[in-house]
Image (cartoon, rainbow, N blue to C red; front, side):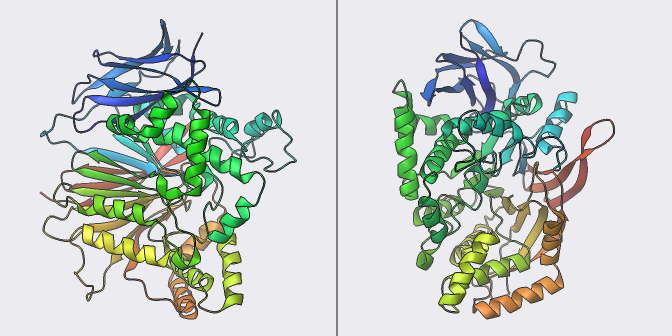
Length: 556
């Protein structure tokens, strides 16, 4: 008899019609998964199979705009969600009001989440921000919830497994053989997602708050696609091919499919091919292998629209060009897609949000160090310095936007253009994680900038981690990176590297904040407000405590 192995996850809620949503689930056996809503809306889908696992992405139709309805998951004649005896509130689907009615949107975001401490036992990372958010909402079902949760990378850690996962791996293979305690194949990736999403409160949270996801490096391995030399070294190892293929396969199943709208799912040839066969494993393996060999054949980036708010989630990992003479954060097709989405309808949006797992604006010393390093690796100081630069690049994780100077310049100009003109949005915000602290950075364009400075408020909003450890040395380093002395050292590095000056300067207008945390943007009309909460332990319980509450724009 089939049961519910993992999920349900509420993923896509249609903000155009307010009438459809998608719910992802993993079943224990082949079956048909059905979602039944209290208001009569429903949907059902047969499972598809990958590597002995059975998944369904159910399109729920007939939802009422501007409503909140509880739902259940059924397999055959059995209700499998909510679990019998559950003390958690019902899982619900909330839809936006009908088109034309004013409404705001609350966007919560963060990244970098260990599901459990890799060392086991005492957790040096402290309380999990997602667990703590779930506890707050389950304790007060009437509390204001996010309309969408953006998970900006490192949803799982393929290279830093917990003690419990290592025991599961050891039951399958000899951990003395590469890749050791890191995951090796698709089955082991399923262990990571099981661990990450099975906590009862997180499971409930993801069943009732829609989510958008994108990968970062640890979803595959630390510093994934740092450079051509890094890629060449990894491809020479006997275990890498299975790791990258399994990583892309599992990302497609567990994260990417839920990012798509029902119309995009219906038009997706890979989804159709996997569902058309009793076992989609080889079809999906072939797709993942071909995508790794030629990243330009697949687009992981996507667009979501929330009324007059446009969200663009950008792939800053798989879409890179790594050859030294052409290094780019985004390949030509990806860059053209982003440019078209940002600039095609300037009057349609009050706010543009760009989800980039990697920050655009770093602490100035970190930015200058990455730009200097990129110049060295490109040969600005000769072959010996280039070899030193490559070793430093990999050792110090120098692979953010600043490490791709041409891409940084083009992205900066795109943001300026997005915020310019009579129809400019009120804000253009880059939402990022990765760097294990939170901060707000605001750029300033020189007075002589061709085209002028943007009218919109352009911001870098960085929030990380949701649940991870931050060594004291790293904290001190990031603080120093914003200091006057740090800026001076950065200028010395850029002179040595013979690099061009950045097209913008920027200052830190909030932070840095360290801890397990979550940012939320509240967008109503052209008004925008930002809050930051941190998960803190008390004698009685873990709680979310407010750290920041700030208006970003206020019009009308």
